[in-house]
Image (cartoon, rainbow, N blue to C red; front, side):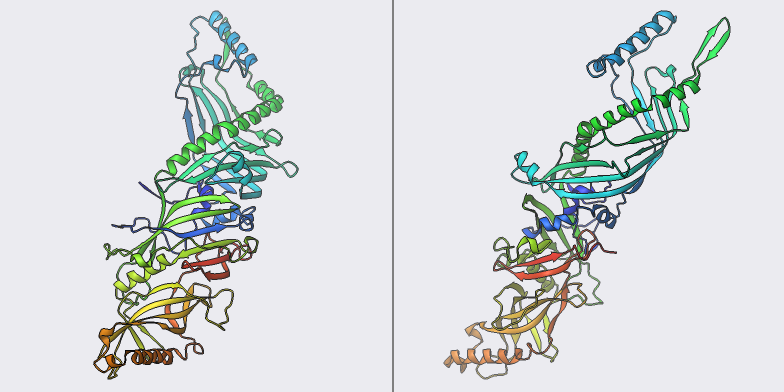
Length: 571
């Protein structure tokens, strides 16, 4: 089963690095008949410098995803123990309390005729509640040392670190009663408020967790032991009304009611002892039960593969074109932590109206990306796109006949006879590049009417266009600026030579090359661009990204070195 990424107040922090490709709106119900997967087509590397951005900004990033954690509301909830509680099970941890309980129960059973109690099966009910948290730190960090200590060789260990100067929790009521002994009535408090932490001793919680990709394309999650300072954190509580059963003693017809005011006073007097018990219980819950609860919830939420599917406007689409958009998807393939946090994603692009189209094998992946142009200390995040993904988009657009022609500003029209493909090329000699620019070659197959006696009326020639991949002025994407034609890449079948041309094939080919040189002669001085653009870089986690450096490696990956620390969260 495929599990769509959805907003989850509990688990969103755990999926931060995977939920980032939001440049286009996610499709909640995509219908994709066939998925032609391109392994490791998209890769993300978050450096140690990049991870520092999350140290104190996790709350802001969650806000970008619609998750607000500095305040919250919870509806009323209740919990009933599935099995009865046997007090003797607590002898080891609370021997004095168990002994006192046994004495009181035996005393009441012996002295009160008809009195008896079954094994207890409590129900706890918490009314509508809310909280306000004043975070002084809310961060997501990597923990390679803990990963090594655990003996983990793949995946990653991350940790959410919270520091709260003041946490205020208020609830309408807290009640408890015994389902097996309902005559005992209810006990509890109304209008309860609890505060924890102050400027001197803030509440600190560190929640480490281990994640790794699995064979199903999903994410395995394991919450590890949680660190906290609950035992030192100042905690105070207050309430408006005490809820207790009505207890009265009758002597010869005269009733004596339980003095609830005295019970109130005793509770306030014993507040330090009660709060200490609360601290111990909460600390024990955080260390033991909470990781188990998170693991269970993670299994429910992360069942199946993690996949994000989005709409993509086909390149070359005219304004009047009402055909449905392409669907492109990302699936988690691998995640690991080795100095940097590295995420590998399988990608696919499909056309809903052309579901049988298969990627051309020769345009596919050729090797792993080379992310070593810059030292990791010089950028926050690296994003790589395999040529296979871009060529798949170009293929599907051509099959829609969006790329039948490339029209130049001088009126020249190139009629394409095959889908264009993009690939690596060395930077031309003498060319000057900005850090946000790189050269690529666009291989095209073009039909032409040469009007020459040595050639037939129509010919098809293949050649490479050298183009500069550069950022748009508004930084909304990347476009291709035409630079030159590599005439040495010319391929022309001899069948296009006329009888005259076959007498001098070499000379004819040189003539075609010269014509191509003339056609591209002005490209270096005139800003000639191919219409359309690639939406790069995307917006990740609501963060706008600045391109630090862009390159194309020999294996055909577009490698983008990105900074987000200066740009900050998208407003």
